[in-house]
Amino acid sequence: MAILLKEHTKVMVQGLGKEGQFHAEKMLECGTKVVAGIRPGKAGQDVLGIPCFNTVADAKAATGANASIIFVPSPFAADAVMEAIDAELELVVLITEGIPTLDMIKVKNKLKNSKTNLIGPNCPGIITPGIGKMGILPVSIFIPGKCGVISRSGTLTYEVAAQLTAVGIGQSTCIGIGGDPVIGTSHRDALEMFNNDPDTDMVALIGEIGGTDEEIAAEYIKDHMTKPVVAFIAGSTAPKGKRMGHAGAIIAGGKGTAAEKKEALRAAGVAVADSPADVGITAKRILEG
Image (cartoon, rainbow, N blue to C red; front, side):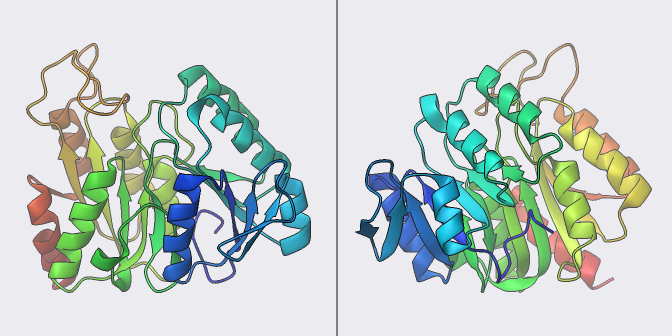
């Protein structure tokens, strides 16, 4: 399952500047196999003991890297993803925010029929406790376990993981899918991944107002999900027609409200918590039967 971070995942860092170096060091500290960095014109150098290459293709050929995390500035981030797709990397995590929507539409079209799975943009990344992380997530709040976490909000990814940890529920993998209108991995994509993952027994799904991603996820849960799901939808008090935080969090034409999303999820058999502080205890109640 190429969206998951596993022991065999070898990571390269595209954009090994100041920000990339900071987070690469944190990734190395928690056991992530960071094997290459991309710094055009700086091939042959080492940063933090990581060998640098001019291109993604060169890094893949030399190190066997099969995944990439991107810290490239927004005007150039789409091209960085395109390069990773051309190199047929299995997994790409795009941290960058502020990427023009038209650029992401081009990326989304290129992803079709490719071998690459994209997480992001405008996301905190992915972590598999005990294995490593690709992103900016704080390691200390996560513990290994069997609950998968999917969230459009980075902050709520951390909050829900902390709630789960507090009640003794460890996490198999936590994914911040990003809050932009056009993203690589949807709630539904991640649900399918967790449904097929033998290391995951249940899923916590964190959504927010805007779009129809959570309603589509509810349809998948109703028709295909074999594992219990607990959910929280942010933005219950948001006024219609107003953007609330993320570029994708906008209610338009009476669609995308928190109430609609909660209704769809409950109809699919999901236990919906009314507060992020209740996700942990709701998940524990489900597990205890």
